[in-house]
Image (tube, rainbow, N blue to C red; front, top):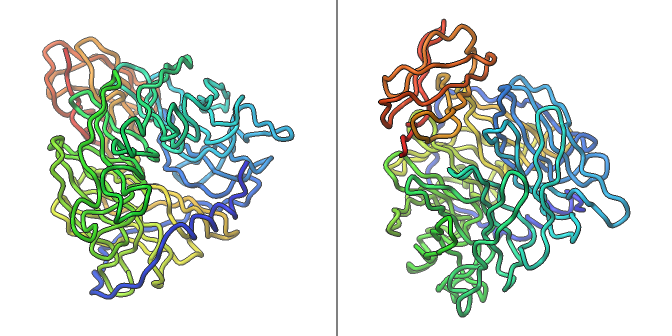
Amino acid sequence: MANFRMNCVCRTACFILLLCVATAIPSPAQTFTSLLSFDITDGGDPDAPLAQGLDGNLYGTNYGGGSDDAGTIYKITPSGTLTTLYSFACEGESCHNGADPYAGVVLATDGYLYGTATAGGAHDQGTVFKINSRGDFTLLHGFAYKQGRNPYGGLVRGSDGNLYGTTERGGARNGGTVFKITPSGELTTLYNFCSQTNCTDGEYPYAALVQATDGNFYGTTLYGGTSVSDCGALGCGTIFEITPGGSITTLYNFCSQSNCTDGANPRAGMVQAAGGDFYGTASAGGSNNLGTVFKISTGGSITTLYSFCSQTNCADGSVPTATLVQATDGSFYGTTWDSAGGSNFGTVFKITRSGALTTLHSFDRTDGSYPYAGLVQATNGSFYGTTSSGGATGVGTVFKLSVGLGPFVEPLPTSGSVGATVIILGTKLTGTTAVSFNGIAATFTVVSGTEITTTVPGGATTGFVTVTTPSGKLKSNKKFRIVS
């Protein structure tokens, strides 16, 4: 069980913050809204990104707070009404269902939200759980040391219907693991890090994986790799590819360039863009040693797109710790944890594929501080996120940022064969008159104003899903991929 005030202090001590000088870029017009300040009893220290549920509401976790200060799972409406769904509870030193949920939750096709807790469980090594919108909680697995411990990274839905994730430590060599878990809770360890001499394969996978269009998973390790001298004995971190069967390939070793201008110690996962390349952040390194945004191909060719603290007083922020999200305008949106001694307490930014960065919002403590987690673009077009501290009571906030992007629909899953069942998430879907897959009409059922069920029609090819509503046509945020 963690005290979230101590967590913030420890995290601050972990980063080396410097002051940089450059030229600030003004942000475009947008609307920022503080939706909620946590008050400890309903949770605190929200380090996780939010996830949209079938009902259109947003779901997340608090690392601390709640009835036993062991964390909570919550639901929040797009307008800011909070419901605590579950408080992790402990009896003495035992937290059987888990404690300190750090990574948030992911929506699966069965309507449940799946997540991890970093501590607790039968062996106090962390747990995997599922929960529905009513708050019905099910413990799926408690980690034992050899299976991995401390799952700080979130889960990702696999195209096979299983969930995949990482544990930061533990496993056969205490370097962390990659695992697969079925919706019923059967766990398989796919890989144990530090399986190579001096952990050149990576160590401590801190973030979630992403499944690419080739069916393999891609991720990062916080430490390990071949670049040791520039980052100390633990190493500078890696980017890796792993097959669903557990065969791993190291694609890149951070700090391979002089003075670590390519970045170091990535705390976040990556996102695959429509063109096939991956985009991500490193929390250290870069030209100012305060983090980078990078692009990497599936073959391991990396490009540093931006080095943080390149503006006056670090107005652009520093130490990016969260996964980027590619929005419907094609650009990427993310957060920085701090400003390295500048006048703000973290930022929200937009960056184009070519690396042009715009600061959209700078936190000032009253509206939150230190946004450790990334953003989610809800189907209403707006972005939602959390700050790990600040706000009215100093223990974290939920916020909304609108930049003028319109509503869209999101298919779940994002790929499937002809005849497969697909859920479509959206807003104001009541009265829908047509659904099509890349122009091919599909049969459908409107479940609610936020959910449609449909099947992939015969003759469909890879392309966008379109939904015709009384308000107009809505296009999916990404192409639906037809698989055989």
